[in-house]
Image (cartoon, rainbow, N blue to C red):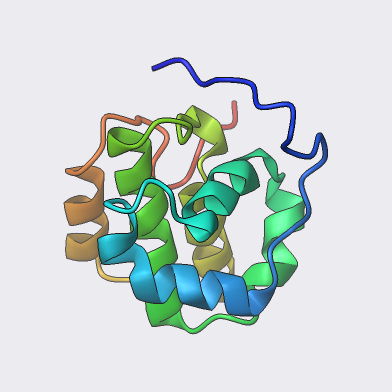
Amino acid sequence: MIGQWNPTEPATVSPPAVHQLQELAAQSGSLLQQADNLLLKQAARWISLSEDEWQPLLEGLSDAELLALAEFYVKAEMTAAGFESGAGNPAIAVFRYLKRQGRLPGKEVIRALKAETTNRYIPYGKVML
């Protein structure tokens, strides 16, 4: 899939507010069917944020919201244009954050999420050599 450049979109991406991430997590199941949704368009731009930019945002979310957010980005990468992210998928930042906090979900949850994607970097990103 090839994205299109839109000159009306800002060149820099502002990090989302915690309430925007909570809304994204709450609507994650139905949001991908709403191509003209503003939140969906913002979520696509947030992919360009670094893991360091994601970390403070994740602190304001519950474990359920974090998992819903990760699931959204995994499914979006597979089904929606503009969400191609590979090793930069925000779900990786979510799982690394949960791992550092000692709050990882069960292996069955991680396996189920991995089964939904062809992104080999899910859940923890590139292997450090």
